[in-house]
Amino acid sequence: MSKEFDLIVFGATGFTGRLVAEYLATHYGAGSDIKWAMAGRSRAKLEQVRALVKAPGHTALITADAIDGAALAALVARAKVVITTVGPYQLHGEALVMACAQAGTDYVDLCGEPGWMAQMIPRLDAPAKASGARIVFSCGFDSIPFDLGLVYLQDQAQQRFGEPLTQVRGRVRVIKGGISGGTLASGLATIERMGRDPALARTMADPFALTPGFTGAPQPEGDSAAYDDWAQAWTGPFMMATINTKNVHRTNALLGHPWGKDFTYDERMLTGDGVRGERRAKNMAHLARLQHALLGFGPARALLRRFALPKPGEGPDQKARENGRYDLQFTGESRSGNRLCVSVRGDRDPGYGSTAKMLAESALCLVGDPQRRLAGGGVWTAGSAMGLTLVQRLVQYAGLRFSIEQ
Image 1 (cartoon, rainbow, N blue to C red):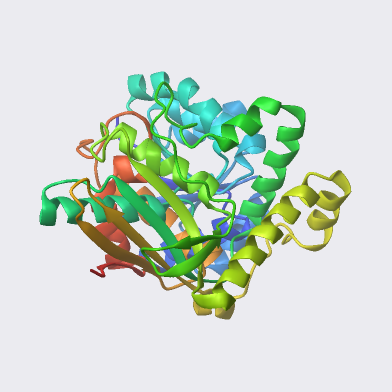
Image 2: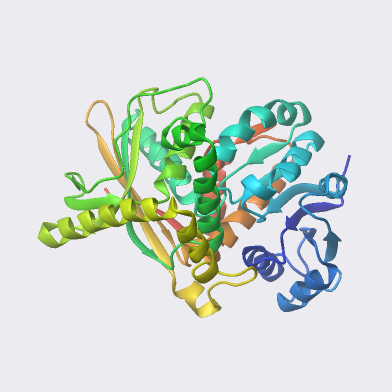
């Protein structure tokens, strides 16, 4: 049965949702074959966003609440793909993703909440496979540049060496612009749930939490300061590694472990060489431990929500988004000692500008695959569902660069 819309942006009145709508209006507006709509709780706010992003006046507006099951079922029935920016997903996401899984509607989000994902994967997989829905979590900065960086690296290794890289190190060289308030809000929600549910802490610590039934080799730790002899530099912990590493292992598992069942991957921030680099790495590790301890304290979380997190609809201005960027390095080694290094670079701030483009292009990648040649129904990662096809779209349209360094 044909669908009315190629995609619907759910949460278009939020800051990130508005950026997604703006990207679509700019690149897939009047004259485009892509049919898209905006959805949210308030018709008046949707009308404001439509005018603000200069979307065509005929762009459809759909009112629906994240807790209204009937409205969500009606919404997903109208679209090939639903984009949702309404998080934290552990609080607001279940009804929509379940509606998509049951209706056969593809779904992409920005989820960086591995505890919720670990709970939802076994619940969604069977209905999604039965309906043909492709459910793809984590289609923003967490975790597309990392997940697809690994896919790109491994493909290049196969072309050059005829074998996979069984050890890979992901290193953040530059990150300007920071992460989104939504990511921080999701982190706070996760910490609060960990206080009520000790099992969630075990899930967060498990690198294979998103690969049900499979546990691979012991993985490198990422919480301390450490010297990286491959990069010839000191490294400190990277806060997004908790979600990115899990998605990378899930991609490997969903592809049938082409990188090996003993594949290892870790993710860190490069801090430089010499005494200064060591000092920065140790300070970073100390600060991470301090932040974790403080966030476990309820009043500290309340203060952070009140004074540090962006309010709903708020975020960095256009200049700040355009001045942001990131530069990631992935270096791997095969069993026979072959080594290869690639980089992934983004031309906008990671938390908003680049994320909005990645999310939109992920959805459009699925729209452009009506025969399900990339993937069938089920719960996927971007790397396993779209892989190099999405890499090509991101390079062509979204300002990302994937390059070989050695």
